Amino acid sequence: MTKARDYTLKIDASQVVKLGERLAQASGEEIGRASVTALNEVVDRTYDLARDRMIAGINLSDDYLRRRMTLQRATPGKPVASITASGARNATTVLGRYDAKPVIVANNKGRPGKGNKALGIPSGQKQVGVTVEVTRGQTSDGFVPRGFLLPLNRGTESGGNGFGVFARSRDGKLRHRYGPSVYQLFAYQVERIVNDVTDDLEDTLAAQVDLALQKAIEP
Image 1 (cartoon, rainbow, N blue to C red):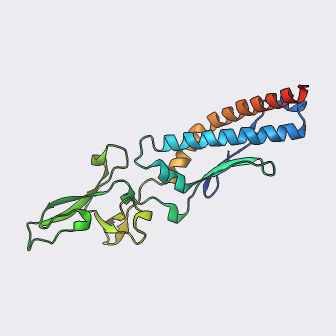
Image 2 (cartoon, rainbow, N blue to C red):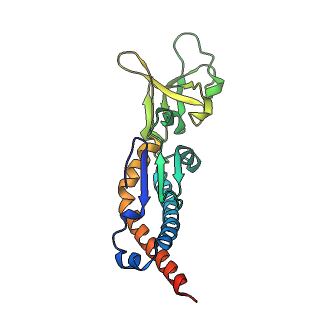
Image 3 (cartoon, rainbow, N blue to C red):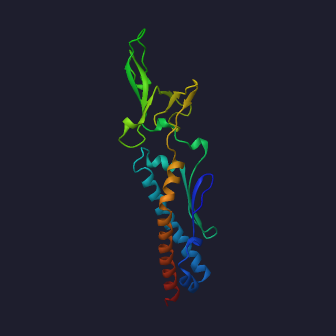
């Protein structure tokens, strides 16, 4: 299992070290077919397992993960399967995607404001912060004081509701806030499932090699 700039989990038969006797009995062609079948079964299961764990407590949709990840299945010409989560800048996850909502209060200073229909802020009220739900069901843990929502140039493609969460730093600069990315979530989970994936590959490849040997000796 290896890492790259884009976080990639690679799976290939060279990781299997417990099949010496079985592999010695099989031909190269049989091993090749068994390897491709086993690799693709395992990479499909791993892809599902990783996504399930990534969103178990994080407020992202499975569809969003799929659009940020790439599954590459093995072929006879390239017997390596992989799962990649993009680490590119345009694949970061804006905080606005995490169900961002404005915190509003009455505007008692000066003339009442007009509000903001797009953000659901009625006339006479103003934004004083933003809540986000990064962990499912815990909006109180995601309060951004003095934060505010602004429409994004890329609309709903970048943020779940088309808005980003912004706040000014101490030096007065306007900064766009980001949350946990698919890249980060995938990297975190890979470290925790890598041994299970290796065991799964060994068991699956052993079963496929046994099946190939059985077919080879059948009349």
